[in-house]
Image 1: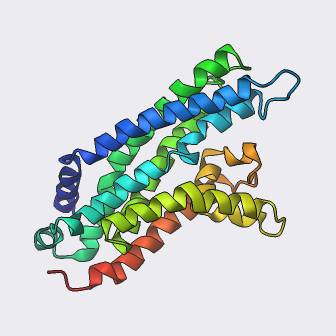
Image 2 (image 1 turned 135 degrees about the vertical axis):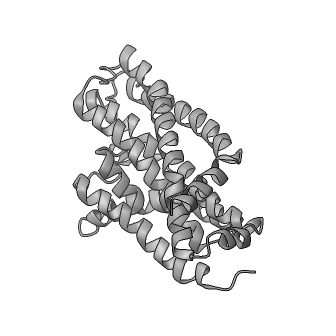
Length: 264
C-alpha cells in the first residue's frame, strides 16, 4: 500500500496543472474576499450593512468554501480523469493490479495537495478580506477562537473536497465532462438549490446536507447564510460525517462501475 500511495503522490506532484490551479485559486479568493468585505464596510449613507462585527468576518472567511471549493474538486477529479484521458490507467493498474488498493492510494494521495491548497486558500481569503474589515469595519477578529477554528477547519474542508473530487472523477472518468459538471454544480446548481430550499421551512434542513452546506457547517459559518440563504448548520461532527459519506459513496460507485470494467 505504501508503494502504491507513494507512486500516486509522485504522479500527482509531477504535473503542473495542480499548482497552476492554486495560483488561480489564490488570486480569485483574494479578489472575492476583498469585494465581499468591501460590501460589508462600504454601504450607502443611511443603509445598514448586511453583516457587522464577528459575523462579517466569519462570513468573509467562509468564502474558502463558499466560492473556493470548486478548485480542490477540480484538482481531485483531474488526478483520476487524467489517467483515462492520457491512457495511463493501464500502466497504473499493471503497477498496482488490485483496483481497490489503487483507488484508495489515489484518494489518499491528494490529501497533502488538498491541505496545501487549504492553507494557501485560507491565507488568500484572509489577505483579501481582513485589511478592510480591520481598517474600515469592526475588526478582522483574527484573535477570536471561533474565527481561528473556522480558518483551521477551512483547510480541512479543502482537503476533503480534493478527496471527493477524486471519487467523483472515478465515476465520471471523461475529463471534460467531469469539469463541466463540477463547474455547473458548484457555481449554479447547489447555490441556487440552497437558497430555494432555505425559503421552505419543511425543506430548510435539507440544504445543510448538500455538499456545500455540510462543508459550511464544518467551518461553522456560511456566506449564503449572510446573503439570504440557509443558516441552519449541522453540528460539526455530523457535517464531517456527511462529507466523508459523499467521498465514500462516490468511491464505492466508481469502484463498482468504472474500475470494474475491462480497461485496455
